[in-house]
Length: 239
Ligand code: GLP
Image (cartoon, rainbow, N blue to C red):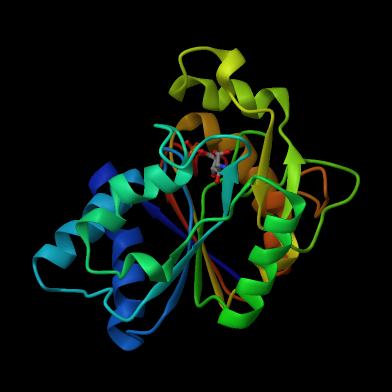
């Protein structure tokens, strides 16, 4: 079941996303959060930091598992997702850093270890997702077949170009990444998909109303029983 919330401003977008996460933590302080990177969640994380500073929410007993990470970037590389999460969220809230997990992209073995870690942790309570222009979620790219568990993928050129804005040159954008598979993502109790901007309107409409196909990984969300979608007016323009 997909519940679409369209908001009228950037502030409402971030407040709605952060509000859903904060409410979960207020009712379940030990919640297991699935977190995402990219530009979409930055304002949501900023709002969560504000709510933490105001004493509205605590992450003390929470834990988090990130969707993905680039292969071959040292952890302290400015564009590594571990560093992104530390700088945008973890360093500013009371989540114990040892409770935060970002997959390591350095070997298939490390990817398998992440799968075991997730199995041991139990079901993710809320999985935050953005969506790529080609319909990827995490780094699950359009393809003939999608993988269930955490695995290493070769990035589409379109994805490398979309992420090149964070690197000095396209050559420095990794060619591979490690990502939670669609199977893992769909096991979450609840999914919070967020998208903003007119450039996402087409892929959002395709994902939510189009055919369910591995060529648009985000369309697999239509099979999930509990999906909340938060969109600004531009990203929801074709719905
Ligand atoms: C990257 C991330 C995805 C993210 C996507 C969209 O590929 N691996 O998790 O959803 O980009 O990013 P943005 O939110 O910047 O559009």
